[in-house]
Length: 172
Ligand SMILES: [Zn+2]
Image 1 (tube, rainbow, N blue to C red):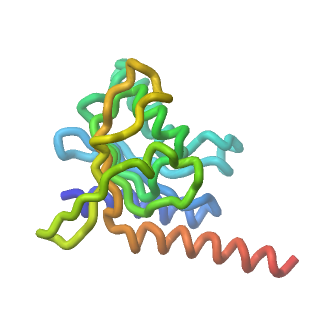
Image 2 (image 1 turned 135 degrees about the vertical axis):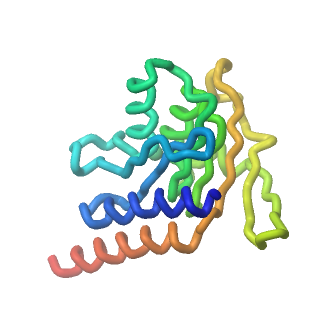
Image 3 (image 1 turned 90 degrees about the horizontal axis):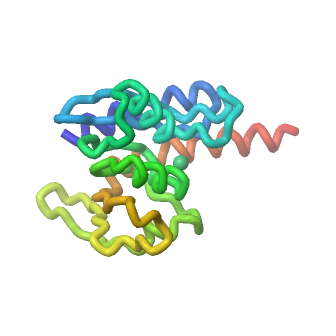
C-alpha cells in the first residue's frame, strides 16, 4: 500500500520539478485513503516555509477544524526537515513515511533513529524508538518514522533538479 501512496507523492514531486521548485511531494493518508496531496511551493508562493508537508497539514487542519491529525499518516518523498518534523509533531501526525534521505546537518532528530530491516521485501526502514525529544515540546507525541521507501526514485528526481540548476548556473 505504501508504494502506491509514495507513487502519488512522487507525482506531486514531478509537478514541482515542472514548476522549477525543489521537487518534493507529499500525501496525507487516513484509513488507507489519500485525503490530500501537496508539493513544495516555495517559489510559487514566494515563501520559503511553504514546504509540501506544511501545506498539506495546514489545509487539512482548516478543513476538519481540529488542531490535531493523530489519525493521519504522511508520505513524503524527502526526509522532512527540522521545521516540518517539528510541525508534524505539534499537530500529532501518527506516522511519517519518507523516500529519500537528506544529508543535512540539521537533521539531528533523525540521525538518532534506529535502522531496522524488513527482510520480506528487502527494503530498509527506520523506526524512531529512541527519537530525541528533549528539544521538542513536552506536549508533542512520538511519531513513527519510516524512511527509504522508493528511495531511488525519490532521490533521482532531486538529483535531476539540482543537475538542471547546475547546468543553468554554468551558462551564466
Ligand atoms: Zn520541510
